[in-house]
Length: 298
Image (tube, rainbow, N blue to C red):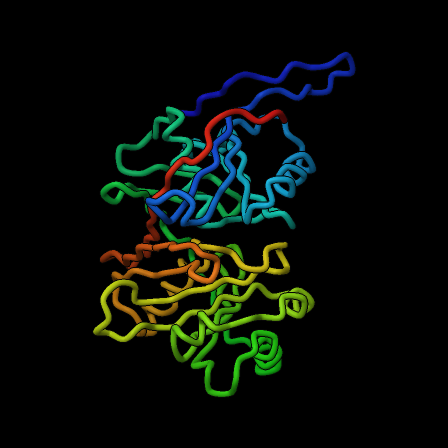
């Protein structure tokens, strides 16, 4: 059930006045504070103009900031708008998990006993509880093969050599990631991209590599470079991991259940829990923990 803290007062010109709004800063894809991907959540976004949301997202300077609103669909529990410092996203993974965590923590009551239903620009996204963590249903994926010219330009911007790129796909589940499967986790972790060139090329780039089958722990190492969205490197990325899972499981590179790691190069230790169910739906799970709770004047 949506909980509305109340409408903003109006000034003499009928313009909504700034007021205190409930706020959380949450760390996602980690159970240890400050080791995942931080998310700012404004729990009451009623009455805020697009430019006010965008300005606040630039000010937080986090990879994403979300604003919760009453749903416009009878099926949804709440609606969310997701902003990077550079613009709005139709969907993103760690904001989905962190927003749902914050909404539940603030007393939100799902309409269903089975799922939490989030409304965002990409449509309705279901979440479920997996033990102590939340997991979201990966949105439908469209994938295509990038052109050889674009791939060569991106490989050069990443500093990759011939033979280090095993295969590549353009992955679109709302956000679009040009994603490369590389020859080893060591190659992924050693990358020092030219972020200015990646911004000029206009592509958000995901890179990943498989760990040996016999290795314990994570089975996939991931990095995400998003200079066109105002973030050189994203610490832990739900939308990218969702689309990588759909691609790499279907292609036979990974099992239907695995653990991915992301964020090591930023001193993070993000862990993404992937499972494809018997109906073929990929679920992307992760822990969330609240680090800051209070109010923001907006």
